[in-house]
Image (tube, rainbow, N blue to C red):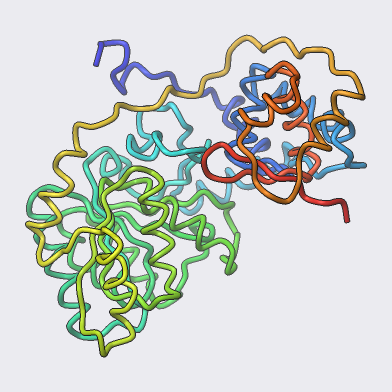
Length: 377
């Protein structure tokens, strides 16, 4: 790492830039990947905001909702009242491991001490209806990892998550929420979260302040749990458990996946036993987890930070080029590189058309830089 790459040398956004970033990520049809494409193309979040209406129109949408300055200012004020700060991708306090995942959140809401986010971390997740033995195992692994200086990341859910957090409050733990940081779920864990923050831990979320978590928000939360961690340990999980989503995200992100084996007679062990059969490492105690995570600690360096810069010139795009790209897309995901080869169009043209379709709400992105077309309603 060179001196210029050190976290302290990464620039911070101005207040005006942070407000523009918040407006852009809160606008309709703008997710983390779209956000990055927009900033790369237009040079700044404010320039991207100005361009959104025309992009959406060219993509086939009549209009989209663009977050207003007043909305963003109100969210910043609500965050300040709750002791929450917004950390931008590329700023010193942004979690290093999270920067390396595909499409990391441009802005992360953080309550607590951001210093804990800079330490190596391991995620422990599992069943909400956990057995006593499962809770004890989560506590033992969390406590052992914490004593070795490793932060414990989990989702503040009932059962395994709560047991892991509680065992690591003294050594450092991070709770990842599916809703806003002022909408704690489950509500009975408000006290646990307060203790986590009071003892040097933190809570993070990519969702707006005031947002109540819905079912489809939890997979997004799970992607952050694995993204913040070097390894993910699953302790008790049924075959349809959300914890298995976290394990899948971990594998896609290049993290180590471990599972605690259980009795074949216990449905709560089926998911873990399946993971081990499919290649996950067996976790018996904290030593297994630390041994598996250790090689990851000095692994891939941080991803290139997102910074506002000069805009990339937009290539002229004829209507027939838009038609060619749209017709080449379908409900089955296709790699962007394959789409470029198939259409024979310049890559810059294809990327802009995809951006227009995405802003218009007609494009869905998938893992592996693949995209699919959402049919018009």
